Figure (cartoon, rainbow, N blue to C red):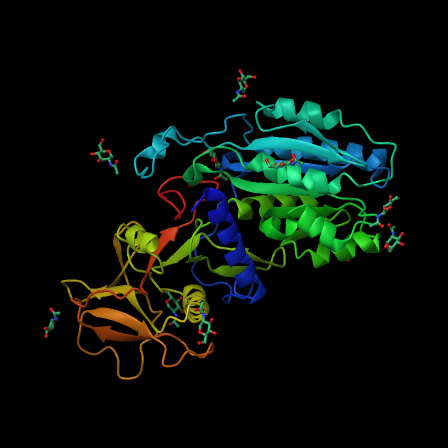
Length: 403
Ligand SMILES: *[C@@H]1O[C@H](CO)[C@@H](O)[C@H](O)[C@H]1NC(C)=O
Ligand SMILES: *[C@@H]1O[C@H](CO)[C@@H](O)[C@H](O)[C@H]1NC(C)=O
Ligand SMILES: *[C@@H]1O[C@H](CO)[C@@H](O)[C@H](O)[C@H]1NC(C)=O
Ligand SMILES: *[C@@H]1O[C@H](CO)[C@@H](O)[C@H](O)[C@H]1NC(C)=O
Ligand SMILES: *[C@@H]1O[C@H](CO)[C@@H](O)[C@H](O)[C@H]1NC(C)=O
Ligand SMILES: *[C@@H]1O[C@H](CO)[C@@H](O)[C@H](O)[C@H]1NC(C)=O
Ligand SMILES: *[C@@H]1O[C@H](CO)[C@@H](O)[C@H](O)[C@H]1NC(C)=O
Ligand SMILES: *[C@@H]1O[C@H](CO)[C@@H](O)[C@H](O)[C@H]1NC(C)=O
Ligand SMILES: *[C@@H]1O[C@H](CO)[C@@H](O)[C@H](O)[C@H]1NC(C)=O
Ligand SMILES: *[C@@H]1O[C@H](CO)[C@@H](O)[C@H](O)[C@H]1NC(C)=O
């Protein structure tokens, strides 16, 4: 399958799951999970700034965006390196020293037409980006007909020639002030926004414009903020680091938790990989079965398991030679089971390993635990666990890094 088709397939999966609420509706908060890194200085992103320079934005707002962005982007390490590692073949377990943690920036502006201010290779440093941002010129036109071309260009730019495993995460940071008479269809399909909306962060610079506000909502962009929100850049950093936190490009599930501070659901850095394809099975040879050691992971397992019609899953829970129940952690080490348990009635019974089963495939039915002998061959619906790639972890992480 060509890389492009593969990508479409992945995006299709994402849209299907998002539509079914699969990605949006996850576990209860405040239990054990691994947070995604919040370290902007080690973010590993391709950030495309798409900025409306029409009269709807106006020169004051444009100046404000330029000043704010140049100050906020100084938290990131901006370079013009396109390859983030010298290890350009499939398996890269030893690549830790060659991964460079930096972000690339490109800038596109639009009014009646679109303009490429600079692509990823044009900005070698934070200073380069700042000088471009502070020299943005307002247009004298009120047309935003260049929007669709600008969004297309943003995605064209991101389609650079890195080998897939080492692609940086894309983030399109879009500052619209109007959509004029553009239709939803034109923006969604013409701008490829429907396919790629997972990577869009929109900052509505004209929230009183109902056409714009409605369209942003109808596009179902996952991260929409508006100019009048307090701490807007805290939210933008958070969204960018969420985009930087991913399990890979395959059948995977990443639990979400509710972040009360910002009132948004957020991805965790925990990934469950389901052995659905040959690649998943191959990948899971290097990773242990999942540890369901908290409510967050228990609920996520239930949601994901039902979504994949999986009735039973072998867990990482097992007895060690001291007869203690142990979980595997991400690197294959062990840690003792805590007081979080979900034994089925009359369990544990004989057998030193554990399988989680759901009695029917109703969404509300939990996956309870049953002991079993450890010598059973694994079924093709097992899972394994891996930590997500994020701003602090770009090696030994995620699924996409290895295939
Ligand atoms: C972010 O990463 C940098 C570079 O590795 C490190 O020096 C810094 O301490 C980290 N900051 C936080 C808050 O972890
Ligand atoms: C990692 O490096 C070690 C020592 O150089 C080597 O023995 C091992 O095969 C390498 N592993 C992989 C997966 O390349
Ligand atoms: C990155 O910037 C440096 C300094 O401006 C330049 O020498 C180099 O050619 C650039 N690299 C790329 C890939 O554009
Ligand atoms: C995007 O790329 C396609 C295919 O390479 C090309 O036909 C199209 O003109 C490009 N669009 C823009 C806006 O650069
Ligand atoms: C909103 O859309 C309507 C219908 O297309 C149009 O008549 C109106 O001028 C638009 N308003 C703005 C502020 O663009
Ligand atoms: C939008 O308005 C422009 C002129 O302002 C016009 O040329 C264009 O045909 C209009 N598009 C639609 C879809 O109505
Ligand atoms: C913009 O943000 C403010 C403050 O959070 C909120 O009250 C308002 O409803 C938002 N407007 C839109 C259009 O989302
Ligand atoms: C799960 O099973 C249901 C009912 O049998 C079916 O409609 C659905 O497509 C299946 N889902 C998957 C992901 O296989
Ligand atoms: C589980 O143990 C922790 C401390 O180890 C304790 O705070 C918590 O209350 C216990 N939970 C239950 C349900 O016993
Ligand atoms: C697994 O172990 C159980 C008892 O420990 C034994 O009865 C059974 O034959 C074994 N099965 C296989 C496939 O080795």
